[in-house]
Length: 301
Image 1 (cartoon, one colour):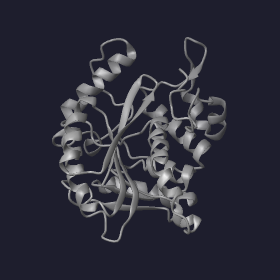
Image 2 (cartoon, one colour; image 1 turned 180 degrees about the horizontal axis):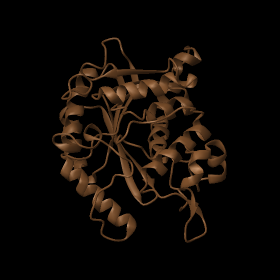
Image 3 (tube, helix red, strand yellow; image 1 turned 90 degrees about the vertical axis):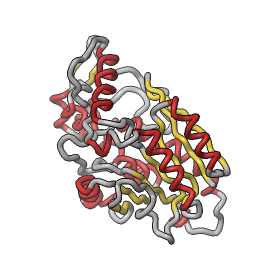
């Protein structure tokens, strides 16, 4: 396993996984760990059961999460990359929060809205345990909301810190979720990348073929993922254009709006949309996780 020293400096997952420590904290991981040709311990990242066991071990070891699980075929996220988003967002909002003198320390804690929290609830887990942020997580899928609620309920460290709200209109993003008296320091989102199931499967085949160095004929998502998590009508670009449009209505309810953007080619259209809705500022925060380049788009009014 190559060292992941390109991650944010505060990311606990820089360097190699300490499998001895992870197995000590979560013994079921042991059966998935083996030596690679370089004599280093690793797991088979194409095995969804191995990835799930690794996630449980990481959450126990580094975030104090005693219970975590997801329904079959739901997205099992790579935790180091998810943590990076949170750490870069912390940098983004830190300056504004530091200027709010006269508030109690508890009131100074940022409040974050996670659009598409998913069954895994991973961003609120990391954001709260690392920084003490409180969260609202929204999702259009009732199963995701109920599973995320179970994770919160079963972990005392998360109790009363994460509120989960079902988005009943799949065509809306902030509407029906942000109340008139809500204020969020920041919103985050990992949007559906693809415009159809077929496109998602093609993308997975390309990714797996690249990783294995040979053509893979059959898609098997090692991180799982269902329709709501991987694709939506119009794909990522349509989703983000709609998000920017809706954000105008909530300029007084949110400090920063942010989202991951998987495709560099989408940025020009998103910049044009941001200018059209008269944002006061926007920026791109670039991240690198091993061979993967990703980016956060952030804007405010």
